[in-house]
Length: 217
Image 1 (cartoon, one colour):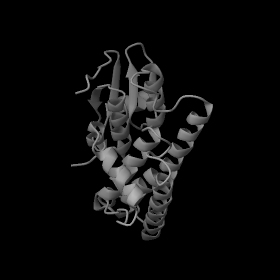
Image 2: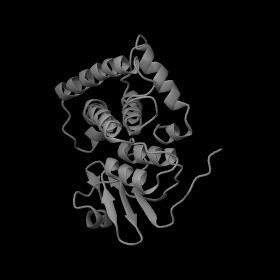
Image 3: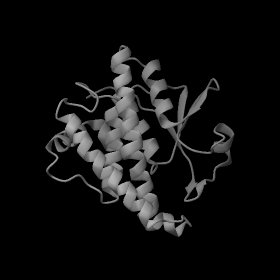
Image 4: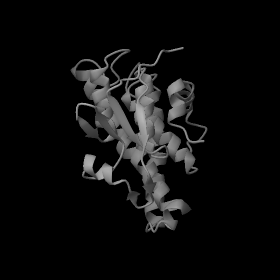
């Protein structure tokens, strides 16, 4: 069992249901970190806690705050900070110019073509958001579902050439992609059984202890 380190100077402001928070927690676990957390009250229309706006002008979480006054938001920026501050057990954003560029490329693809579409598909289909006054669009939902399904196919093709999304080792790209797969599955959007490489990869990631932090009950 991996011993987790809990940095005593860091606090992560979270919402247990927020997908961006979940991928930060998964990333931290892969870095053998256990972050202290503070749960933020949220509503459908946004964060209601006034302290959040004081820490982040966009009033969004997650937010990482240090006892020395350093504050950073945006999930991938937080992950990058943790990766560089805590080098062990290995960099998840890669080593060397080419590897870092490749991981950044695939993480960005996973963000734009899988994770974000999964977020938006939920916004436009789930009754929870409609009840809060979200202006749902069936056309937007259909477009996002098509984007997710096309990305499943493209990622399956990539995984036919490497064990992980961006190469031969788990990286930040896999964490973004897995978080997107989990969220899409939550809304009922799943990859077809014919995508063997994607299925193999998903099962491999799901078996890691960190994956439970990205999944929903």
